[in-house]
Image 1 (cartoon, rainbow, N blue to C red):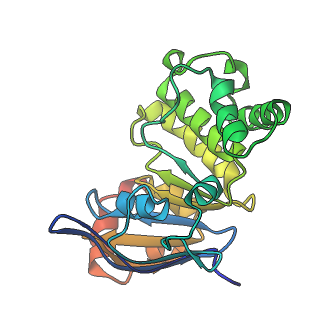
Image 2 (tube, rainbow, N blue to C red):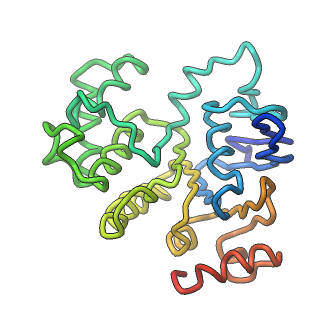
Length: 246
């Protein structure tokens, strides 16, 4: 199977600080990939480089075999196909829930308003947020905002959806609702790349797990390999801290 996304020799420096060192990674269509590791290991930076929110220092990112870092590459088109669910929701506070889920469709994808509304309502229904279409973000809980964020991202019909620690800003009792929404999305054919601290969740839904440590991929494999029989001492030490939650 051809890779949908391929990262080759990717490096990212902030000044003299090397955050990502020689990252090589491939993602197949329909795959659920989880990126795990301690805070500061480079996980979110890798995700932001994939989405071109950060410009890599060197290396290559191919999408359908095309280098997304080439000058001639259409970044707007790429971003429409590679969606992102943020840690801090990033909803438009002046728009209601429905408008948050239609604005990208009409402005970026040029869908007509009726089609955009139909798609948005369908996705809001799936995440249990259809009753809140007229609410503004300020009237919603963190968990509700994040579920709107997921509906908004999926409404754009992306080929790949990136999740940057989507539950880390939530109160514990709200986490399950968001994870349930993500679980429903996994294996629908949508390619998903998650940066998460929810180890049990990562173990249950991932086809492919990458463990990052100090800016490198220290180990990767299937969920069973990484969580069941990790080979690297660093991976074992990291997972031991989560054993009571896995």
